[in-house]
Length: 161
Image (cartoon, rainbow, N blue to C red):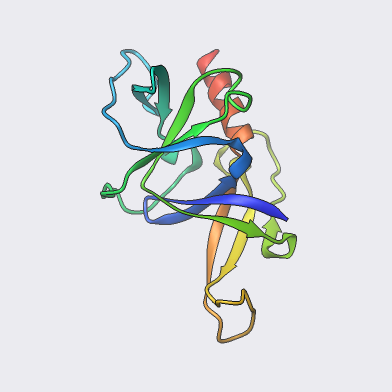
């Protein structure tokens, strides 16, 4: 059993392990950081702490709508996951916290350690049936399960270049 946080980005569904999340906050004004890569959206003050916000859509290859959502949020990572730094990511929407059974996750066998696909742990099949049932008439949505720890490591690797 995994507990995940489901969120939307560019019209697509994504998920991450909830235990990597410190908090979710409404999007705040960002201060651009000069001479940083495009995936660094800027920095903001969250409860007295300067926090760097990244836009992961380019890093993970999130295609889809460029229209910004009215409910934009920042998912702030726990410091342990972010090497003690205050880091968060910008998402369009946060949907649910869900208990997901292993049978709902189709694990991804990633070949390399770089590239966009390497940030995907698997695909989660989430049923819209009230009892979580399965069957031909049950509607399902597919959610990309991201490896946020690998993504954060990659961000630090890029920053050290």
